[in-house]
Image 1 (cartoon, rainbow, N blue to C red):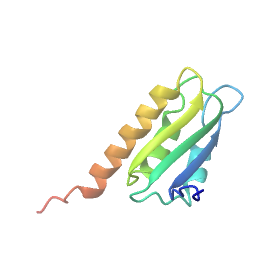
Image 2 (cartoon, one colour):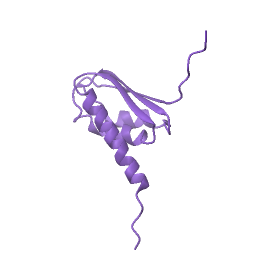
Image 3 (cartoon, helix red, strand yellow):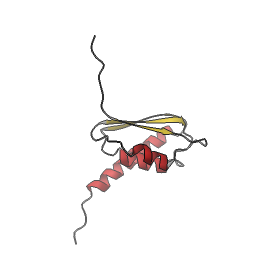
Image 4 (cartoon, rainbow, N blue to C red):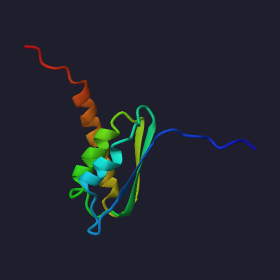
Amino acid sequence: MSAPEITVGALVELQVDRHGFLSEMDAYAACAAVDAHDAPATVLIRGVLRSAEASAGAARQVGAALATAARIDVLGNGPAVAEWADRVRAAAAEEIQLRTRTPASG
């Protein structure tokens, strides 16, 4: 019998509020000490996510924090999870573009 494989990565846990949304401030706090550089990242959403649009600020915060992750997986429940995950990945791509943008010379 061999030992289980150990994966080093980032885990971000978010709690949906009573209205079915994710708070941008809660996402910021959850990501404050996350380092996912070149490692897999998992976002765990507790509760039923009802609106990706109303939770867009949280998606931007998580995407920016996990921008250098090898991949970003989102686990959750609710009608808006897939769209919210897409927003997180888009925010991560935007963050990478911002970080690698060469300043204009002048």
